[in-house]
Image (cartoon, rainbow, N blue to C red; front, side, top):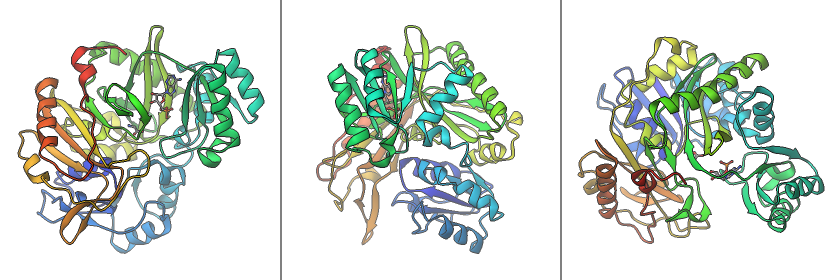
Length: 434
Ligand code: AMP
Ligand code: GLY
């Protein structure tokens, strides 16, 4: 089959790497891809993956490319094209594509929609309300003593949330988002949630319109600095499994969230075929969903796919065809850790164009794969081109060894101003709930 993967981050490199291992894949393109995707080769015939310089939001151009090149199946990585209706548009053009349609993608594209859906269908979530008017939002925040998560309704590049612990700070956050439009027009409407405390984990479920197959747990590290300090980022590292839930507890948590979610989708006529990724806080009164994403997590994908034993293409086709009942997801017992190496200045403005050295030697560490994110080729050298540059990923039979390997690999990679967290997976080592 001829495949097209859409996106250019670490998530997409991991998808390309895993799909390239499928014997069904005879041709694989990535739009626009990065230096890493272009270095992958297919197991079926040894050919290289082809990077195609079309941006992810140029949907008509992507359709033309898919038609002219006889693409049989397209896989979408990022949220923006999903929210813009790429799936509906490909399907209208007679092309097969994997990912939620525009209506289903609203679970991520509108926090107000998601929150209303959760309340209506009995999915455990934070106490919250939605506002178009800053004064009413402030009044509600005051009723929570200012301990809030103030969220812009629309997509805001993975940002769009301010956490506050006093009425003054909550008022300021509401002003910043609604009046000063800190996150652009996404902030015309806000969701104000109570601030929850507890361990935060990522869940993923592969869905086919009627069923949802739960993945193992993973834990992201959203803040830029060690010890969860500093600004929020897209994610500075992940590991899987996150040992805060036994298999039995995970099944229960999955049911508490996914059973009412599936019933709600059926009642509302939402046909969700793709990955549902709930962000969950394990509170003292049970798991609570703080947000839904409608795609693979980044960097969660980088730790899930090395553990996945199935042929990924077969699973994505079953999800798209609505027949996941015939599939069983199989996971290796390994622990997997991904340490993100970011450019100096990230998540603020950062430098680009620095040469990266040592990726090959890093990959000589046992059980290690370096996924590229913000990289590009310049005169056959790999140079930085984004905030999150690399996802250095290692697996082993224990979390301790997987961490040792990932950090040994990180030490072998050099680029100017590289920054990374030193504590990815540390909470998992302590089994620390917080
Ligand atoms: P979101 O984009 O909704 O995932 O929010 C970004 C981050 O803010 C999350 O990963 C959490 O760490 C934090 N957060 C969001 N909502 C809440 C909440 N209700 N209580 C505590 N922390 C939250
Ligand atoms: N891991 C954070 C995200 O994908 O949104």
